[in-house]
Image 1 (tube, helix red, strand yellow):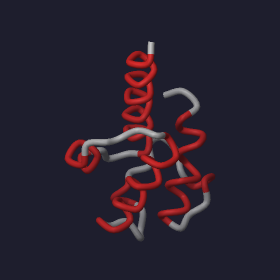
Image 2 (spheres, helix red, strand yellow):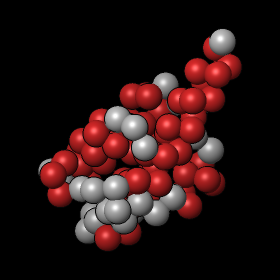
Image 3 (cartoon, helix red, strand yellow):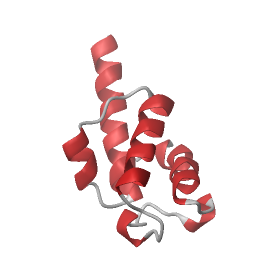
Image 4 (cartoon, one colour):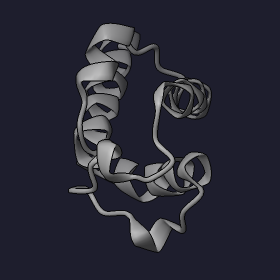
Length: 85
């Protein structure tokens, strides 16, 4: 997990109505009080727009923590970089 976690935390915080300091890589989406399918979709849209990656919806919905999402974004960004060469 590179710098993605640093830029992802504010996105998650905005959707979950938290402060970025409340969130760590280990923060579970299910433990965020206001988390539900609508919040998950808002975050998916924000991630895809912010990072320029396309995430598979089924795979995305299986991610349980902020860190797992950051890892997935890292993988997608690496694939884009490799493809661009």
